[in-house]
Length: 377
Image (cartoon, rainbow, N blue to C red; front, side):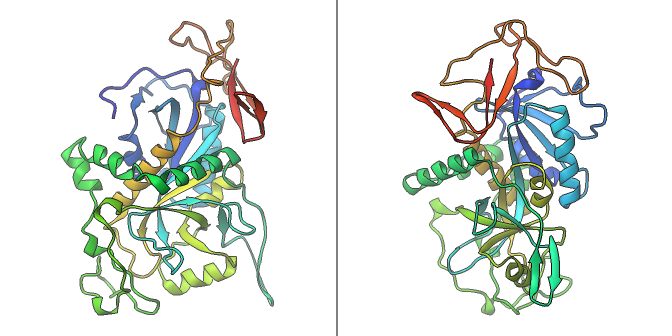
């Protein structure tokens, strides 16, 4: 956690973008940054209306952006497009925030758990349930969405393997967030476990109530309690995306049937970003996409998603080094999207220039096809 804001880095050094739908999602990640950078004199593209938070996690300089008071794939696409015009060196995009989980016999998903988008059948990690047309033979899917970058899929696989042996770091990062201030603790602390109740299909929420205290708890699904040291788990699979808030088990199951795949989460922004950019989606589960959707778990779910994103980024190889060796340019500068130069001296007094090579990442013994990688030259 940062103690004071530092001067911004040259624009070309910001290579990771993390996008959020809502400000409380952004705040959860913001207060997990290792350092935050000043943005008072930020020279954006003239047409860019976005607000940004800049900072660092590990070796990565990061841009945080969020939707301006609205949700859905259209707003997300606009924010992502403007961001890419201002920060031209962005390599990796993450969409981080909350979503509705889909528990099943195969996926023991609980509130506060995290879902990471991964390819499933014909889908590249995200399926858009409102992209297509109804025909006599059923729903005919149309269009195409990009998937997560191959390299980030590999990093997620490595993290998943790590957690077969060691605990994930979500609890530790959330604890650091809560220790920052009493106000953040009140906002983002984990709700009581007995407020996580799952009702079978057909059991509707009592109209007008903000929580499930007066719902018939005798009808809830019987689930084994989790160990105290394993309260938050990470799941990998298909996320469904569209402009409709899914708050009914009937609607949820209809949309899953349309996609014809094993959906484990619903959300509203990924399809907008992934229609134009590769992106990894990370969602903390705040409800079960049914009529019992309430707000009680939203902030904590945002915190667990942010913590998972931070753990993943700490495994991502730095884009400003090749095998740990920096290659500073000789008097070069990073071109600006406004027509000037955004190159600024690094700590060693040398300006940076970044080049993107598609599909190749250097290794100790040569090169291998493993996603996109930016080199310092």
